[in-house]
Length: 152
Image 1 (spheres, rainbow, N blue to C red):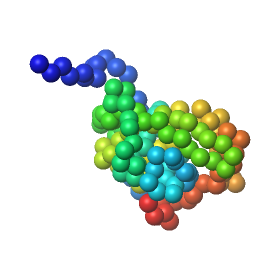
Image 2: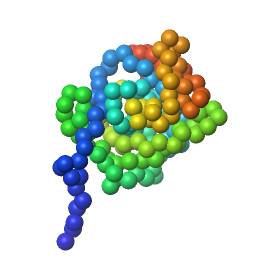
Image 3: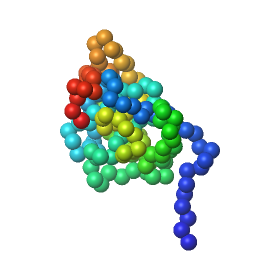
């Protein structure tokens, strides 16, 4: 007999962005579990939880499937993540450890992940649109521009 653990139906729903190819701000960050030099993240304060797509992660990256959550996209459609993975973002002078919800094709975003409210709060982020910078843990990172100008 196989017992399956399922997400309880009364669990909280988180909000994330399922967005089109509109103009948004991004950060390129080096992530320890990526097979690429850096990943492109959407800065999106309208989302409750941060996401990371699995497509550019090292194949042996482990995640906790027990901690998957249900999320509601901006258009109202529900989806479920695969679980949580712990990632370390390498800045010039420090590391940021953060839990990301793992997704693949469930979320249509023009980048590798979303830095949401939880991440920005955790890093005490300061976003300056005038200088197009984001300060994370006291270190300044330059924002990248509009989706049309980016290659993911």
